[in-house]
Amino acid sequence: MSDDVKMWGDEEYWGIGYEYDPQFFLTDKQKKIQKDLIELCRTTLSVNALESDKGYIFPRKNFEALASMGLLGLFVPEELGGMGENHVCMAMVVETVARYGCPSTAMCLTMHYGACSAALFRYHDNEAIQDIMRRIDKDCLIGTLSYSDPETGSHFWYPISSGAEKDGDGWKVTKKASWTTSGGFADWYIVQTTSPDFGGDFSDLSVWLIMADEAQADVAGWDGMGMRGNQSGALLVDNVSIPANRLVGPKGDGALSNDETVDPFFLVNSSCAWNGIGMAMIDLAKKHTTRKKHVDVGLRVCDYPTIQDYIGEAIIGSNASRMNVYGMAQALDKLTNDCDWSIHTDLEAAPRSVLLNQLWQIKFQAAKTVHEVSDKMLHACGGTAYKAGLGMERLLRDAKAGWVMGPTNEVLRQFVGKHALLGFDSLDYWNTSINQRSIDNEVKKMSPEEKKVLAERLLSEANAAAAE
Ligand SMILES: Cc1cc2nc3c(=O)[nH]c(=O)nc-3n(C[C@H](O)[C@H](O)[C@H](O)COP(=O)(O)OP(=O)(O)OC[C@H]3O[C@@H](n4cnc5c(N)ncnc54)[C@H](O)[C@@H]3O)c2cc1C
Image 1 (tube, rainbow, N blue to C red):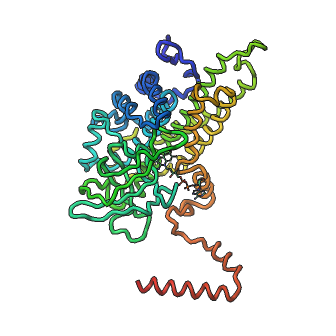
Image 2: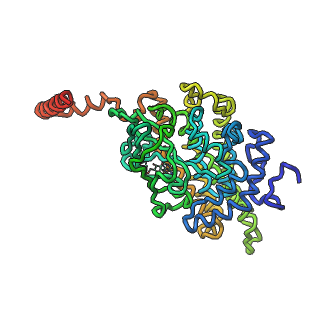
Image 3: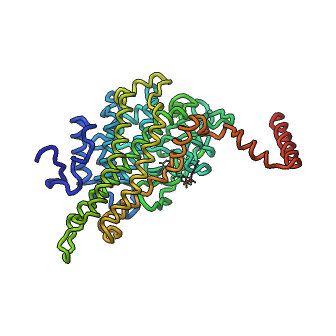
């Protein structure tokens, strides 16, 4: 068999072949990683995926398998023992895990890579981070991001219930998170709080490295409809004392860390998870519809033009989304000299952040596409897909997480529209800019008496604030 034939063990792959994959983005070395990873998915990850889904089991076994290939440290610099790979390779790995292996593992890997990116952004003078990076594959050290706050929902950049203060030579950190993929199962967490000496400005955020024994997680509480292995429960870091070097980067580095690492890495990798799930469903639909016969008319399901149209449209939509994601990953590679972390010895360097508005689009599109593709693949396979046996309904449940995960698709499309029309400041992440048009409009509706009452209330509030 030639290298261009996709294999599933000793057989040719039963799904869609490489002719519909964007292989042209990959180097020969990356194609070899992909081939080995597909085999690992066949023998191990896809088998464990069933167990994770049935029993809400965290996929540590899959992480151990990924670590055996060196994939936890995929883009960790070679000087720390990592593979030193780039954004395109990372995108391929997450998509491959989601498509041929286990979507829950792909989501946990997305969060692991997000945590690695925030840590590597500031690893240069930090021994605690360097130690984790050196042992990441050998000791299978799983990281994750714990950002979402119970009080602010999907506005994960607004950790209103969290804080930190100086404690001797170190720090005391409190973090309340409503959702944390791998929560209670990860070995290390990247969390964000308002900065020590917080003075009311919620853009003043700091980033922390928290170890497993410093976090309390509700491991039994995860009961999501899909992504059942990802264990995204609540997490609490309860006024815990930590050493000085667990502050990741300088105090107040949080907003930059979000724009340069957490957001770009999450947006690329989660998009790959959704694209991978969509392709997995098309693969399954090919397998099923080419094998199922209707004896009365002597046709297979795939012989009906309607089914061919479904598959054609699903491939075209998914590949438009994949081109979008790989294109952005390639752009990030260009901007960072193939994900060279040494550029961040300059603390101001933030080349990825200039593409943030482009990156919002890829997650929106990938989550929207998988929503449509998953529906159509269910239709293509009929009632059989509605039952668990075929594996379609599990993927459909997993796919549903795409739209609702923060930044949600509602938020993303508004970001893009608002930014395009009114500029970046109009996004008002931290609820600080005043909408004078709204104020004027509401005041216009008031009677003279109502205006007087409002004016008196405002005056007394202003006097009280000035007296503080
Ligand atoms: C499988 C899974 C894994 C997750 N893993 C993690 C993780 O590892 N770490 C982490 O920090 N978080 C994680 N999350 C949490 C996620 O990022 C969101 O915080 C969470 O999904 C928000 O849920 P909510 O019910 O609070 O939504 P809400 O924020 O209450 O949203 C409800 C609705 O309001 C809409 N909405 C919200 N704000 C606006 C707005 N400004 N304009 C218009 N519409 C708006 C939303 O789009 C949605 O339709 C995970 C979520 C899922 C589903």
